[in-house]
Amino acid sequence: MRNLNIKKLKKSILENNRAIKAFAYCIKLSWNVSKVYTVLQFLARIVSGFLPVLITWNTKEIIDLLSVGAGAESWQQRDLLLIRIGIMLLLFLLQFLTTQVHTYVSGMQSDRVLRFVEQELSLTAMRMKLEYFDDPKYYDMFEKVKMDIYSLSSAMYDGISAVSYAFSLCSCIYFLAGLGPVYTMLIVVSTVPMAVSEFKYTRELYSWGLKHMREEREMSYLYWVATDRRFAQEIRVFGTQNYIIEKYRNVWDRYFSNKSELSKKRAVLNCVLSIFPELIVAAALFITGSRVFAGTATIGDFTLYNGLLVQLIDNLRGMVVSSMGLVEKKLQIEHVSEFEKLVGEESVTGGKKLCKKVDIEFRNVSFQYPGTDRYVIKDVSFCLPAGKKICIVGENGAGKSTLFKLLLRFYEPCEGQILLNDMPIEEYDLDSLRKRFSCFFQKAANYAFTIQENIRFSQTDKVGQEAAESEERAEEMTGVSSMLDSMPYGKNTFLTRAFSDDGVELSGGQNQKIALARMFYKEASVLILDEPSADLDPKAEYELFQAIQGNCKGQSVFYVSHRLANVDLADEIMVMVGGQICGMGTHEELIKNCQTYERLYHYQADKYVTEEKGGGKNDGS
Image (cartoon, rainbow, N blue to C red; front, side):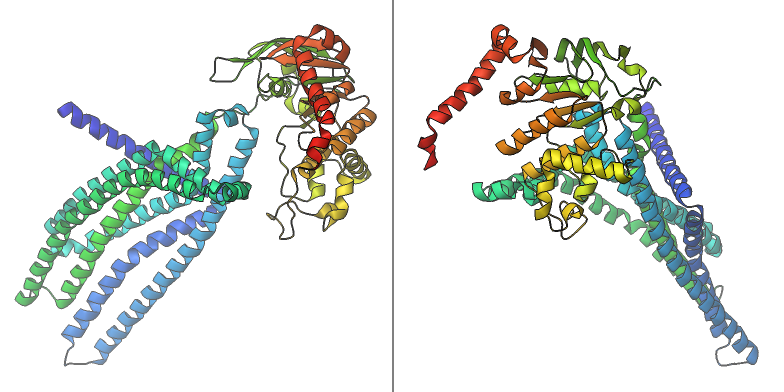
């Protein structure tokens, strides 16, 4: 039993140390953002903590002055009263001033700290390894941190408030010396059970919240589905409104029932425990009143002790609540402060610069995604000499897109080696390497900027005539130029309404054209196109591949296509099955030697023949 109590004590001390460290982190963060605002916050809060005690003491002096001078007015008493009233006025003005200063400074500093942390977190997110976005464990952690940053300002406020309440509490105890230390100690001790209860249930509620993050995630997702425009049409057509709401209610009922039970116990117990300090206050006031009757205390003393005892309890409760708020947020603060240590930045490794000419070679490359034991790529070897074009074909999940992730060093191979110009890829500076590549990824997303900004986003340091010529070339190659006439402000039209009320919503094909133009705008040695024609109509698709054929001479091209009508652009075709290359060569060679390619080709060819023969059948439908 003794060992158990010692363990509990050690755990409590550890919890308090962690809370202090969390508060210290918030203060350090605030100090780095603005030293002046941090100092002003502390001063305003501490001064405002002392003022109520001073006001109560000055009130006591005024009452005593009035009691002594009742019925015997003199100029000296009137002067003293005037002085006391003047002091009271100054104290009230100072209290008002410190409150306004604290409100202003805390609001300004809170915004500054939040913006600072958001920027730092954004930088961390943009620099961290891509695997953290693909790993559910770390991505959940990242999403949690994105929410936890909003606790920083609140934790800082709780910490400063706890310090302020502690100063005010000490001043109350000092002025209560005349009442006797016994009552003061009894009030402080009687508040401890409530503090313990508050601490216990605060920790339990937070721990409960961590265990039920899944329900919170489910509710957030269902809320997003119900309110996001991407699902609006299907929900109405399929009539799934009630289904989604019912699903949300089921999760909420399961989530709320357990939490409400804990909160109810906390509220009831705190109500019961708060009775004891109030009883002691009542007893202390009775004793003070008796002393007034006996002539050993004044009416001013009674007023003073009454005010101080009320403030004592309020300060104790305020200190407990603020301290518990800080304890409650300590894990959230730790998540934020430790996040950069948990995730690693992308490895820059070598310092060699990659020149414009890029020969690519994969030697027996194998790869498994972190946390899995399945090979997505297995023993892959091939070469892409500078200026050549390779088309990669294969069914979904064959490993085509993973090749690009390895080539761009989003991930490192588990086995084998990737060579660029006969040098291992890791010997090159990462920025220098990626500068030589321009990419169109599957499900490419555009930005809520202008069309021109979207296109130039791939190489923001390109300016002047060079930028204008590259932009015009990219627009012509992708058909964006023909879109601009229908845009309200041409290339200065914003996409979506995030930045402009006049922003436009584009079709899938239009969005894809802009994303492709962004890829072509960048001056690169190697182009990577992962399903570049997925959302394009047949005419736009044909024009795109004609543009690549005519305008990308001298550039290496990697492209994935499920439409085998586009393979004739490539110098070679690579066929992938289950993460391995099962055939490589020209169309004619693969038709003869690769059964997988022959099957895929004939499936599509037979489909087109069937559609041509039955074309009249569907024309009137």
